[in-house]
Image 1 (cartoon, one colour):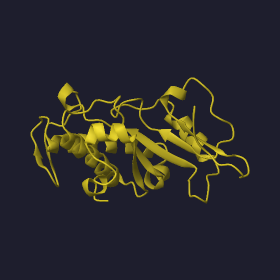
Image 2: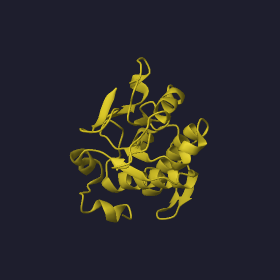
Image 3: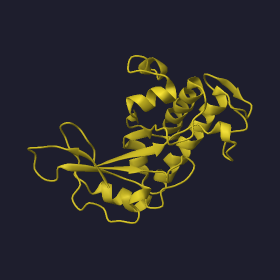
Length: 201
């Protein structure tokens, strides 16, 4: 279990936690301030087998008003594995910015991969808690441990697709991206200054 935040000087509870598939074999903290629950089991195309229990655990947290932190937030694994011939790589379809996907490792297919995987993750949560899926904050986990394409633009397109997939599926809450600055630059080539433009702020 990974502690996220410790706020000194406030009444208990004071600590928020991240919980996902690695915590399936253990117990959850009994008094969390908030919980951030991983929807996937390590890859964007599978499920955290403890999702139902972890959603229930986080919903019972009080959250925090200032700074605002809801009881439950969600995160999904991202990536762009198109060069690895994965079974769920899109074989066709169209995108608003990149045109048609031809099944190859293109920006259009990368976008559609992200869009489809995000919708899949959204529906995993919606089947258990449709309100949480719709209104909870969603985070995109961007790490080098995942499979990524060899060019920045392909990875940016996939992440744009992940955002679009959540929105199109019904997510109305905030959507954020988290990474380290080094990993983010290695995957996307972007800096804090150039990121807003790539993702329409």
